[in-house]
Length: 154
Image (cartoon, rainbow, N blue to C red):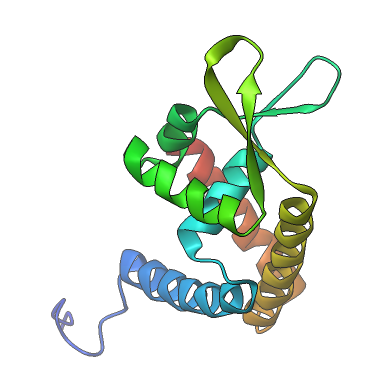
């Protein structure tokens, strides 16, 4: 006799499992950011700025606020608030846009680069702890599967 879908014996839905796992990881990441005085949005902004446009000579040209807002999928006003907060902490600075004197670009400061790397290292450590219950082969397979999902659904 088939088990009803809402029965406790039915296998959990894949989407539900992903949601629970992600929520647990995200909660841990929020706690991990607290000692750095960062919110998840602020860290996402640091990541986006770090991945911004590079000049022909390899120097960072940074991002315009409107481009940052698009990457973060937030309103430009919200991007301005996040950048103001990061600038107050000395993690980013505004520089004149060489292509448009009316515009500015956001770049990481040395402190911003250092803090970003520290957070990323802590995140790698925390993820390593979280996924340590899986065998190395299972972690590699999970990474392969998640990479495929990310590529297939940008």
